[in-house]
Amino acid sequence: MSNLGPCFVVFAGSIMLASAAAGAVHGSSSSEGSFAFKDPQGRTQIAEIVSKYFPKRIVHPFAKVDERLDPRLLRAATFAEERAHACSRERCWHYVKEALLASGVINSYPKTAYARQAGDELVRDYGFKQLSIRDPYAAPYGSVLVYADGGAAGHVEIRTRSGFVSDYFSTSACRHRLIAVYGKFSS
Image (cartoon, rainbow, N blue to C red; front, side):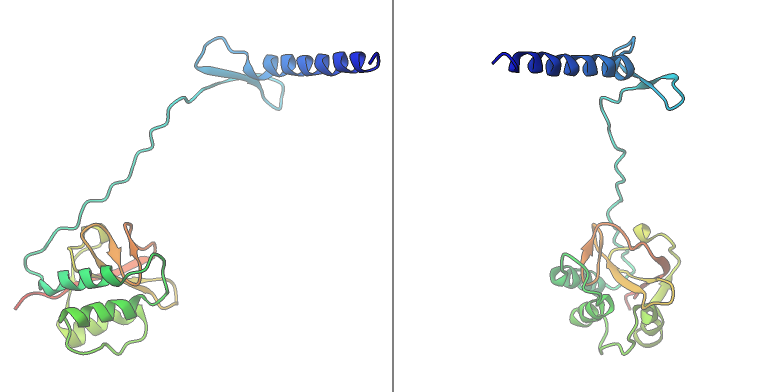
C-alpha cells in the first residue's frame, strides 16, 4: 500500500501539469469567441471559434413544363422514374430508350449503342429537335439530356420535375460535359 501512494501522486501530478501546459498553449484567450495557440515558429496566434455553421444549400428549381413539347415526354419521365434504381447500372441509354418507347414518344427501339449517339439518332429518326439550352437545370420537364465523358460511352438522362433519371434517379445533373438537350414538339 505504501508504494501505491507515491505512484498515484506522481501520476496525478503529471496529468495536472500536462493539462496546465496545454491550457497555457492552446486554450488561453482573452475573449470567449477566440482560441489562442502557438504556431510552429513559436508565435502565439488567435483564431475565431466557429460556434454555429449554416451551410449555404444549393437548391435547384423544379423543372418547368414547356407546353410546346409533346406531353408523352412527361409520361416517359414518369416511366423512367418508376423503373429507376438507387444506383447506376451503367445502362442509362437502355433505360431511356425503354421509357421513350413505353410512353409512345418513339415508335421503334433505337439502334445506337452509345449514349453519346442518342441525340443524333433522336433527331434523325424520331423527330426530336435540339433545344438551345446549355444548363441542365433549365431543361424543360421531359427533355432528353445527352452528355459526353471523354472517349467513353457518354450518358443520357431525362429531366423530371425534381431531378434527372436514366437507370437511376438523381436530384443533381450529371458531372460530365453536356452535349445538348433534346425535345419533341407536339404536332
